[in-house]
Amino acid sequence: MPRAKRHFLPGYAWHITHRCHKREFLLKFAKDRSVWISWLFEAKKRYKLSILNYTVTSNHVHLLVVDSGKRETIPKSMQLVAGRTAQQYNLRKKRKGAFWEDRYHATAVETNHHLISCLTYIDLNVVRAGVVAHPSEWEFGGYAEIQTTRQRYSIINRRALMELLGIHSTDALRQSHSMWVGEALSRAELVREAKLTESVAVGNRNFVETIKAKLGIRAKGRRISGDDASTLCEPQVSYNDDFKA
Image (cartoon, rainbow, N blue to C red; front, side, top):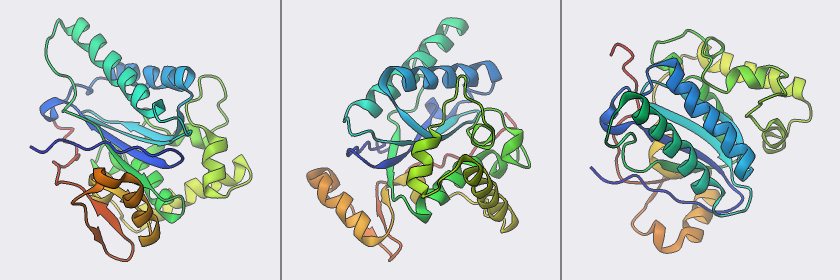
């Protein structure tokens, strides 16, 4: 299987996906998902990671972040969250071996309607899997926090999210966010979008060409497809869940 690619450039929003080793259901228990979230909160405090949305499922995670401009913010945060989650799980289970499937994958997302699509795509992950009917029913994701005024132990950077979306108040953010999710549900947009989990960048052609140029040799061999373009990486295994396990 080809290795997942990690590409980081300062100042962009990134959709990160990370799957458990061999697609095992190592995050099927609530306490293990809670551990991942607690270390995500620690990464926010320790490295100033700016988190826009997230969700934890039974065998993979989705994370939407914006790069603060420091190149090591995202890699160090992912190392902390993934490493400590695996360490605690293996100690508790008296288990040895890999917890995560190779590397995590990162996709640059243009901050326009593509960011909205990615935001709602993450919210609807467990809905697509048939676990809940609405993301408000899933406590291991960012939807509920965006929709409330929780301040203590908050993970979502509402200010950064509002700035990127061009929204000027938390009430407007909640209303818009709820509307986007509702519209996606009404249109039954519950299919997996490979461009959001397998590409180097998602956005209009100018955005994607800019990302490709900045990546230089790291983008060698990647092609730009479509007008609403994405620069594609190697094929990867689907991140779909099977909650029947």
